[in-house]
Image (cartoon, rainbow, N blue to C red; front, top):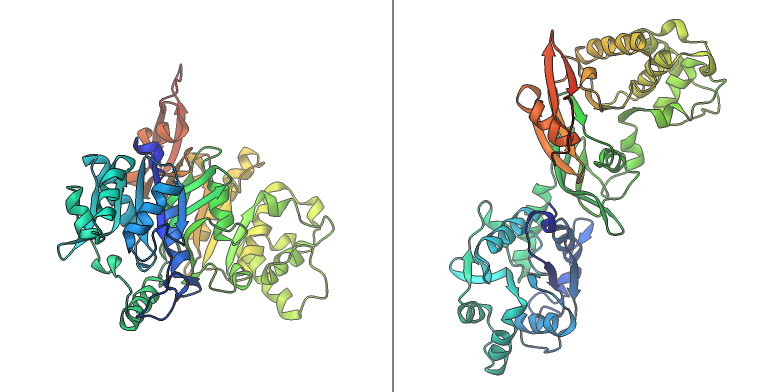
Length: 453
C-alpha cells in the first residue's frame, strides 16, 4: 500500500532506536529476532507503507525519553506529518501501521495508539504540533501520556492481536516476543507472500503485496505490462531481494533457508529458460538437468536419471522426442520438454510464465489441453499460470490473481467471483467484455476504447 496514492498525507516514519536498555542490558535495536534485528524487522514493516523512513539513534535532548526523539525529528528533518515507532516493539505489523495512518487521515489530528487506556507507540503528529512539544519539554513533562493529553489527541485501539503492541522491556518480554515471532513465521501454504515490497531507486515495483497459494489450488495470474509480475516471481525464486516483506515457499522463509536448494523444488517454465537451452542437447538430457536446476548439462547423467527422465517424458506425452536435439523441436514440443524438466525435481509448485508465447493456434490448444490433463492428475503440483490472455485459462484453474499497473493487487480469489469484465477493464485500462463459453473465456476490447483508470 503506497499511502501517497491513496491519501493526501505527506508522511515520514521515524524509528526511535537510540540508547541501551538498563533492564535488558543491551541496545534493543540490535536484539536478534530470527535472522534479523529488532530494528530490521520494524524497518521492514515501516517500508511497506511506501513512505520515507528515518532512524534516530541519538537525541538532541538525551535522557528525556521518547519526547527527546520527537524533538530530534523536528530539529533535523522537514516533514508535514510523522509516524513515530519505538525500536522495542518488534511485533508491530504493516497492517497496524496502515490502520493508524488511515485513522489519522480521517480525523486529521494527532493520534496515539492505546492499550489498556495508556497512549503510546505508534503515534502520529504533524509539524504544527511543534510548539506543544517544545512546551512539554520546557515544563519537563516527558511522558507520552501527558503529550497526548496536551495535544488533545485521538486514541486508536487496533483490531486484532494485542501482541502487536508488545513492548519488550524485560528478558521475559523478549522470550515472549521470540515465541510469538517464531509462531508467525510458520506457513502451511505452498506459496505465501506477506506485505511484499520491491523498490528500485524511487520506483515501487510492488507495494504491500500479500498472496497465498494452498495445496490443491491452481492459479492464473493476469495483469498488464509493468504491473510487477516479473518482479514478484523473481522474488519468489530468490533472484531478486525484496525491499520489505516476507516470502514463504513450502513452509520455508526467504532469507532464512537454503534458497538454491529450495529452488529445486519449484518448477519453472518460461521463455527465458527456453532461450538458454543448448541447441545440440537431446530432450531426455534437458529433462534430466531439471533434477540439478542446471542449464547446459555437463557430465554423465546417472542411469537412474535417464530412467526418470524417460518416465516423465511419457507422462508429458513427449517420449517420442527423447533423442531429438533441442534445435529441431517445435515451440510446442519445447514447452512440453521444459515442463518435463520442471517435473524432474518433483516440485510442489509449477510456475508457467507465459508458456504459450510463440505457439501457433493449433500448438497452443494442444499445449493447453495437456495442461488441463496435467493439473487433474493425482498428486499434481500446484500450477501458477502467468498470462495476458484469458483464453489460456483452462477449467482446471480454480483461482485468479489480477494485478494492476501500480504494482499491486486488484483482485484475487476463486475464478467465478474474481474474473469479470469490470476487473479486466480496470486492470488493463480499457473497457472490456469478458465472456465464458463451454468452460473457456474470451475477452474483447469494446469499440472506441478510452482510458478508465
